[in-house]
Length: 242
Picture 1: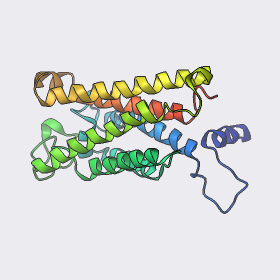
Picture 2 (picture 1 turned 180 degrees about the vertical axis):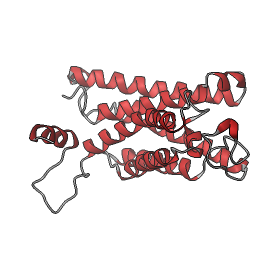
Picture 3 (picture 1 turned 45 degrees about the horizontal axis):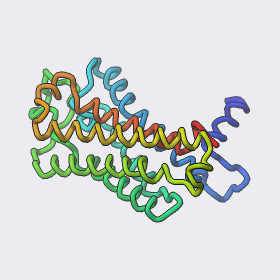
Picture 4 (picture 1 turned 90 degrees about the horizontal axis):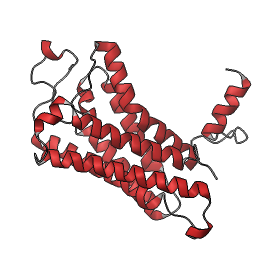
């Protein structure tokens, strides 16, 4: 890697080489950027690697179902990293820390309490991409759904109400801050709309066949994750920096 590429990467990650007794991941901007990249990259990586491994050309019923496939490591590692990074994120005020802390805990609970099985038999020839099953547990499944919903609600709250805060009055805020706030609010609303769609599906207001045919759960989760990731990238001053 040449010097210019090293410099660009160091700038993006806010790496300070002057303090040799410290670790690099101490800057809140760096944390925001990494959280954003991990969030936006997860759905694509899961789909791509399962396609390369198994040739599956359509997404699974939900992102959480990749836990039961050959690419479960990607799902567990990325979601766990997101959980830990959200837990250590401090923000500027106590409310920033606590909402992020809860979001991180809920992310880890999503990993610890997986969703329902893809198949009920080992070595299912019709679903060769499924490599493991767990004993059926309604508690585990409902706890998974609850944790996932609370995870996105926390992130949506951060986008709508925390990221948009400023110590300046609205009339004195710069153009880029106004643009960033619009992005935060849009991302927060998209996360809420995705959750609302999934909730209406659980109540069968939207017919279950639509969720299996299209599949809506995967796409709504992807919409929520991409919105969350993009909001954090912007918050990390990757775009529209003052």
